[in-house]
Length: 103
Image (cartoon, rainbow, N blue to C red; front, side, top):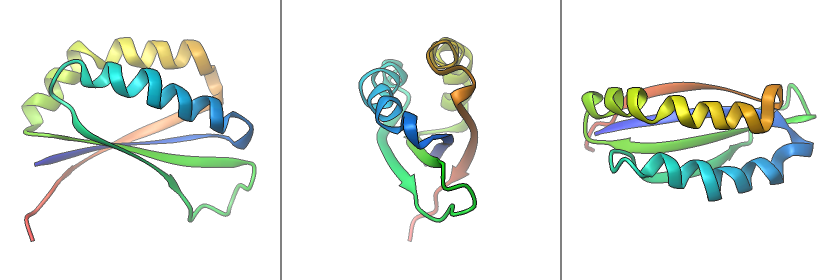
């Protein structure tokens, strides 16, 4: 199984608006493809370097790298454009792709 994680950074003043956007707009649209499953959203608590901002981790699972690549081509550009149009430079992020091992 593949875990697709995006870590977002935003100012604390934007937290509520951004979390609502993720829950009500971004996540539902991201899942429309049927490729992304099991969304998880968490606040990262270990960043004390910048007390004015917060980091949020958004994770999905996928069956394969091919499914992720397909999602990147067909869905990601529209979602990223909408996010940038709404929040501009108030939100930055980076993605990490991981392979999960059964325990």
